[in-house]
Length: 281
Ligand SMILES: [Zn+2]
Image (cartoon, rainbow, N blue to C red; front, side, top):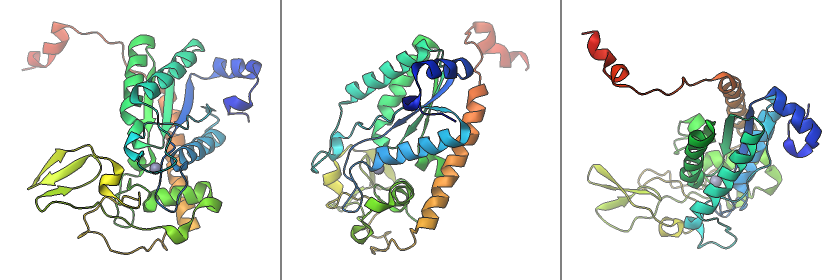
């Protein structure tokens, strides 16, 4: 079954658009991932997940958008970043193209958290302009649980290493895998991650650069006191990695099936509707 847009002729694509109103768009980034993973980690994971979902569900899969919003990583060599506005415009142009062929449901499989804001903005604009409905899937949101005690989205951490082992095991340099808890510089303001810090019991948002909080580029996003203080990745085996990947792929296949049929009622705002609950009193 042909599911990749890149492998279809325009005639086949035209036939596919008659049968489906849903398309999958994988997005990633080209940014450092510590000493043991390649710069393409985010787009490679996003692509591999999308490819497997397409293969299993038959859903239409677009080429991956490899570049993302990664300015915060730019102190490390090899990082290629787009401006927020550039990325948002590229995504919106892709949605505009899809809307011409009757696509009304778009599932982004996003491999890079830094893209989320721009993806959301483009998706809202497409909702406004084309009535299109977009959903943004990220593997860490789907798993939504710590992995061996570590926050699931820890940059270049356990889960991300597993997704790379399941995607391209031959390029993972496990001998260089390390844990780098967020650097601490102050006795009272405790840095939590790239975007937030803790002061007393409250959280304050503090957008930082990766190099502010990590020398290695890996970010396990834990206070040194919480970290196991080890470089042990031995539990991240090929088998564990495949299972984690399969869990996400299966979840997404289920979601895609439901999302294709998901409808929002026509928006209509009125005083009567707004005050309806008061009538029941
Ligand atoms: Zn990543």
